[in-house]
Length: 78
Image (cartoon, rainbow, N blue to C red; front, side, top):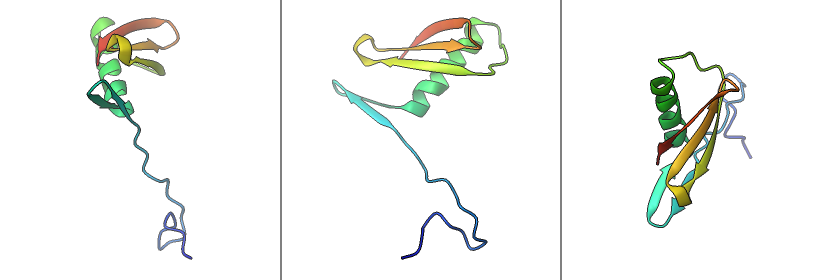
C-alpha cells in the first residue's frame, strides 16, 4: 500500500487539516477564527506585528478571544 503523503520525489507532505465547529446552528472553522482574531488585534493595536497569537473560541458567548505577543488581549465576534 502506497503512502499518499509521499510525492514522486520521495518527500513527505503534511496532510491538509481543517477543524470545523458546529454550535446552535453556527458553523465556523479554526482558520476563520484565527483570521478574525489577527485582524481585530491589528485594528486594536495599530497594525502591530504579531509574532505569536493564541485564540480561545467561546461559541456560547459568540466570541473569539485572543492573546497576542504575550500581552495584547481582545476579542471579536464569531
